[in-house]
Image (cartoon, rainbow, N blue to C red):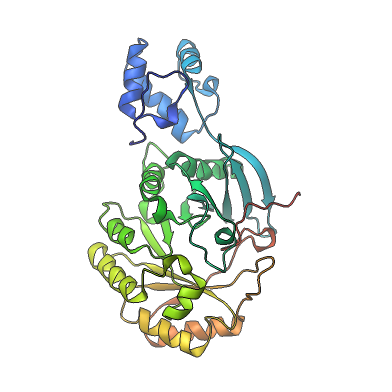
Length: 352
């Protein structure tokens, strides 16, 4: 599986940052046969071990040699909160002190994981806690992958789907996000089907076009939140230059190139994007497309004057969209009581 190209001759090299070929070369240089590389990789990626001694089918001498020369990296759980609905929010720390959040959402015998692709976000969406908290850095593919594995281990069940809808704009970290998607999809990694791996973007048009050319059937969601340009500019200032007209064209090209059905995310904000003018514009924007609209009642943010629309208004949006042939659903936000729902991730965790 493609990872990172670094000098594997260095001491304490992180095994999660070397390619398969580099690992083979390293092991053969120590006198071990080629097949041992696959065994080691299984422990690193499938079992997510943090101690070389846990690699039970690897010879003790090889475990010792690896422990002397290599590292396993990984994350540290800084905090965890459990919602009344069973969701769990995690604050994870990385070696350089950077922190990011992820959420596990169980549903019967399935587990969905929402991961962050950046620590913070530059987009500045006014309804999003992450966007108001500033930006630290983009995450590496392994750091994104680790979030899924950490949640999976805590729930003691395999993740069945992953949504990149946590902190950050995934398409501002395109290369690492794509590597993470491929690691999550790979049989040598998490083995999650491509159609169960979703990337959510505010609408970075050049990257949407690039994403359409990738061979895998990864799923795309676009945070729309208004089909009126003036409103969208106000609530989503980071994508002003990517106008709605250009976005509409790019999404039509995406559908034509992939045949896949995209999703538009729409957080209903009382008195902002839930009036009749906004509804008419949304119908016009989505009419005649393959798109599905996910309606979300805005989740409360501490200190924000923005408030959610009503449940009745959300139902009106669903009915009106149906009249123009657009399927829409009202998404139930998970983890609202622990600030783990859409737009609430801010790296603030209450002590349980």
